[in-house]
Amino acid sequence: MSRFPRMFRLQQTFDSPRLENPAAETGLQLQRLNLGRVIQPGQTVAITAGSRGIANIAKITKAIVEHVKSLGGVPFVVPAMGSHGGGTAAGQAEILAGYGITAETMGCDLRASMETVIVDQTPQGIPVHFDKHASQADHVIVAGRVKPHTGFVGDVESGLHKMMLIGLGKHEGAKIYHRAIANYSFMEIITAVAQSVIKKCRVCAGLAIVENAYDETALIEAVPPDQFLARETELLKIANDWLPRLPFDSCDLLIIDQIGKNISGTGLDTNVVGRKFNDHAATSRDRANCRRIFVRGLTEETHGNATGIGLSEFTNQRTIDAVDRKITAINCITGLHPTAAMLPIAYETDAEVITAALQTIGLVEPPAARVMHISDTLHLAECLVSEAYLSELSERSTLSAVSEPLPMAFDDSDNLLPVMPQTLGH
Image (cartoon, rainbow, N blue to C red):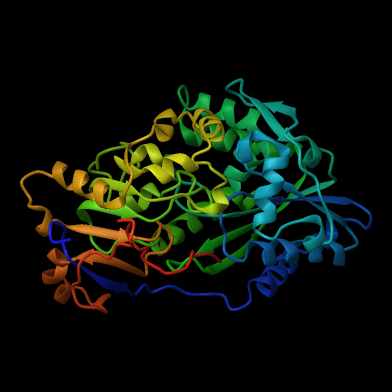
């Protein structure tokens, strides 16, 4: 369609390490902590499993289970994902099953419940909620990916601390902690609650996971509870350095094939697209500046949770039809981010969406528009960009064109072909 810019395929090269055997590394890291001095034979150990699409998460979780068994402990897995899965135990178990984490595959119980117990109160008067099943365990191992949060900024963002607060706090904890952010800083809340959880809930270890820019396991580290804050602060800096980025810092239109909770807490990672502090405009604190965003679909793993769709200006009708409004509302209200659930302008076909979007980018004529088309905000090693970027390639040794500029590729229904022919996953 001549009214659209021509696109060429682009490859990015990221300098990132990669673990060849995450399961073996998990076992080695846990051995460093000498947990046999803490976990006695016959004692129960709750192991957290979150809702993010973490690479190798089933293998890593299984390795934790096996290590606990080797010590004579009795492990069980608990979903640690706040209000996700529609805020129901069955919904959370279903999310884990989608990642290959079930009682059968793990070789231990999976105890899913939305019930919490209040184990303490912070100095700010905030009740500390904790998963009922985990509260009954003799010990707790907190496992989670360390990475920049999509909304909060601090020395720690997403990681072990967040798993103790939002994950193990379940829906009730997530609600009260997010509400408290209106009165206290994120770091005040996260450190106060974490101190209570570590002290009261018998947390014996953390397993921090950091991924590289290719969505692969790059680093696994077992951390003793008294070092959670110091070490997670350091790991967050590493995670930020390894975060995948858009190939260019600005565009008139960003097209995203799919968003979902397995991709990011906000469906699309605001650290990547540049809307961390304002839903619809870049700020001076953002690295990327996308004038318009078009979301083309939801991942299967998100189960209709379209959190983050409200950060885009445009979508198509099939995406709207796939949204579970109830689940999305629960998640966004719990996170005090109701605008993330607002529905953008929708058209029947992608061609109609792009036509409309390119009418809103100012004086730039559509064929000359700066457009980037990505699979999602986790997979950025290969994407499509418009020929307006060609002149910048010579300045960037990490970028290479692997095709000539060609007209945008649509199917017979006037919908774009995805960046990659298959659904990306782990």
